[in-house]
Length: 370
Ligand code: SF4
Figure 1: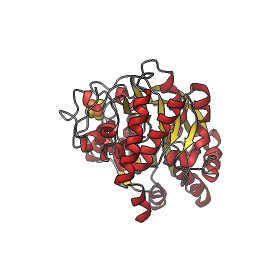
Figure 2: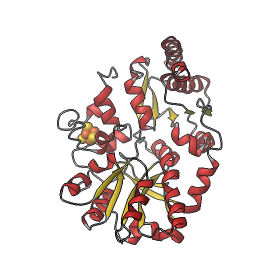
Figure 3: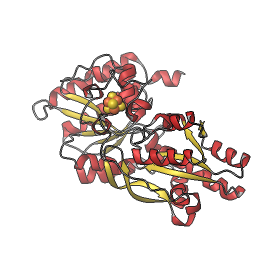
Figure 4: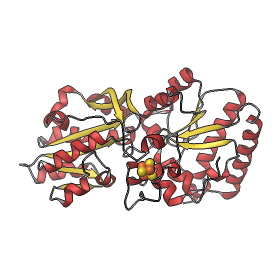
């Protein structure tokens, strides 16, 4: 507890916030507005919960990017998941996914209609159910960034070892660095620095951001989740901007190594290959996803059940696509807190507790940005 408290010290937070204000001021003549984007849902929640946004000087804007894996899962994937559920397959999933809308329905509605949709806290549950019901097909909804990809993919090791043949994965694994590059290449999006994710970086390593800083000349600072971690990350970005530098900085070295977690990276590369993946709101991004290699295709639910996964360009009135790119704040969506709230979410950014809309709904008490 003492260790955690160290990173929540109010006096230290005020001191770093003061430094951030000085750095912001000294940049004012060169940069009227400095946009710092976090690409991690846990950062998004921590920023709202701790009131960090309100500690920023007027010219520093914190914006949220595509940091929540549930939010970036596109409607076509959800259509495939609901199709499987309605065909009698036992669908196993983390809880948030059951309320993510597809184009026709969502898993919670399939469940109400009699489909078997099991909510789990660990991917291992899919294997347990597969062993319990050997005559049934079990599909685990394998959604996540690099942090969750590694533990989910170890299911295949276990399934092979235990000769479990009735479990497969419907994958929507995403890779964060290609999405960061895609955001920088969109002329409508302004990002001056990235607050790089903590959990994801523990897997891929701080070195994974070096191509971004060398190609795009944008500071990338890896930060933890405590208030002081985040403030130090923001201060690190502003210091780099002040000095005209663009480097990878690891403010979370107590957890993140430069080379990442080699064991996790090895198992991911054994079973998965990189491909151009569709993201909700961002479209298809080159090399931004991981899918099961052909040699392990019996574990790939899309191939096993011949599913066509379509990509849809629009989410109707929901503006999650723009929220995920940091183009608008959630409260700029006309449905925010009116027709859309955590009990009746109209889009995935309000479904997941780490979604930008849900975080602002729960913790935001007014945004003092222009
Ligand atoms: S407030 Fe609701 S409808 Fe609007 S963008 Fe967020 S999730 Fe979509």
